[in-house]
Amino acid sequence: MTATIYSFETGVYRPPSEGGSASLLVRFSRNCPWNRCTFCAMYKTKKFEPRPLHEIKADINAMAALANDLKSESFRLNHGGRITREAILSLLERAPGLEYHQGMDMLIQWLAAGGKTAFIQDGNSMIMKPQDLIEALIHLKNTFPSICRITTYARVRTIAQRSLENLKAIRAAGLDRVHLGLETGDSNLLKQIKKGVDAQDQIQGGQKAMAAGFQVSEYWMPGLGGKKMSNQHADGTARVLNAVNPHYIRSRPFRLIPGTPIQNQVQKGEIVLSTSREMLLELKRMISALEVTSKVCFDHMGNHWRTPKGDLVFTHDYEGYQFPDEKQTVLERIDMGLS
Ligand code: SF4
Image (tube, rainbow, N blue to C red; front, side, top):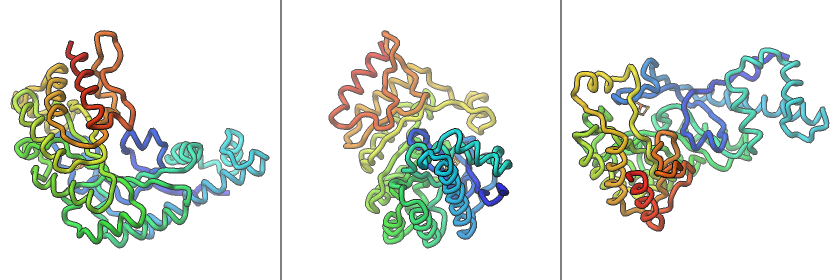
């Protein structure tokens, strides 16, 4: 047996919550069509490439072939379809090239976790022609009926460009959640980081995603504006989030990544980075101004602050804190961190 029948692509990036649920990573396009944000290194050296529908479908079919053959090996060994070590080794013996397959581990983890969730890669799946995206989603769901949640990264600008009718059709085809990079709700800071949108665009795109029926997960970056823009960053971010009231608000504290344009600005002294304590104060200011019914999450190791007792200020749980009920708890935890 040759391993080429299992040929499919897997991209590098997915949100931590998708790792937590061991999502199937299905690559609908390569890299990021915008690729200009000054803080981001994810796809910087790579060019955006759309993938034709037939190629995406072929990837899904190859994943299905691998999943089915793993299960068949398991049944052959009387392991009842469970993905055991023996079943994996047995298939590796029959298709030796498989041990170098970049997506094999991911697929095994996904099967072992029950095959329930999928994440569509890469940086902005909404850039696809709506009809192609719909067809690819339907093919994915039909091929793997066990999948009960599909999510993806998307840009608010692209969402704003799509008609509500198209967005609803994409939602109906099976896309449940969009992960949006808000970063900040302050227009000046959005311009500085070359996000390609202003605060109003962020509000309109976020609201449109909500109106289409998606679960909306917004990511913001404490510390992104450094010392000088800290207050406006916190205030603007709360303003946008209050207007959108997304399902999830996720904190991704800024960290300087070598080779990014923002690193030059910091080296030249154009941006003076906030200290860890200043970032926590900024977080307090933003959280205090939040009037939402969202889940507020700190599900990334960058939220590293600790209380005097040594425990983490925030849980890194993917479901975070339910606002407004737990807003006071979060503010009290921040004060413990500041003390
Ligand atoms: S849109 Fe997202 S992936 Fe693309 S450059 Fe900006 S932060 Fe990076």
